[in-house]
Length: 205
Length: 187
Ligand code: SF4
Image 1: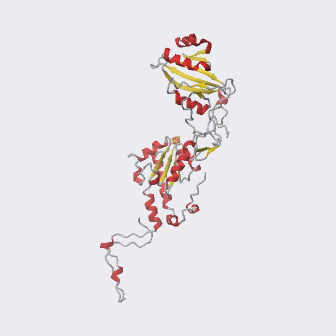
Image 2: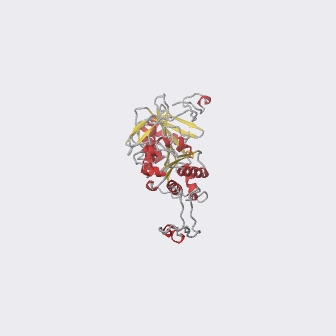
């Protein structure tokens, strides 16, 4: 959480500095930074701190529906190792997930189940549409396939490919991290949860 | 003529519509009412113990419209026999799931995709689409792009866009050039 701006950073190596001068009535030692007791202090903005914490500990909800899920699994495995980006905690529990990775063909039979899982995820949440099928229906222009998961839930990052390589998924994850890093999280915390316009999460089918 | 076809003809001659051999594959076309008896006979007396597959064909404007296709083989895979049954649109087919348990799901799929009903089937529900979906999508008149439906809280469907692809073959074209897959811009 290092702010590179001009915010003052007090180094613990600099010992107590007592301003000289004879102000007399105020005991300045009360205000002096004590490096032994207080340790490191870093100044930053609340937004930056919250976003930093959020984006480096994304818990994905793996929504593996077809062949793309194989690449999703590969991304989590040792060769590509998505845990380098703090997103390795894939559990099949929507209530503890931050980002839903829709990887695969969404059939109409499955579509409302995906929506239901999405609805069970707590805010704040993000969605990655991985691969051609999840993004647009892919080659399945047919009666059985939903033509892109963005018809049901809001998507933050689309990844092209059939299937995308694990590197592409990691790139998509990094794009999502950039996006999270620029969010106004404090405003989101203050906002009325009913006020969907603030969060830009109006969901329509 | 193969031994198998000869025996079927001996026993059920009056129900055999035609027989055909094509590149060593033998087909017997029989009448609907004899289906079950013939199947039982094939299994019990001709050693055709395995039901490989069941399919159905929609001939659209031919009468009778549908055709059931049963693929039988011996367990050691040395002999095959194909049995076809023409079915008109309002006819039902006797289930053979009591002869081969595997026929259960095959027949459900035929029912789901083609709308052919099976008498005495133990569990004739849709298997791929959901209960309540109103169409049988593999029928020829059903558009590939689908039709809009909605069952609140269960599922909904829409119409898929067809511009710029995908590449669809024509079922009714008379030569391969016009049947060739290409973007039809339908929907
Ligand atoms: S985009 Fe390709 S690899 Fe991914 S689910 Fe669709 S068909 Fe499979």
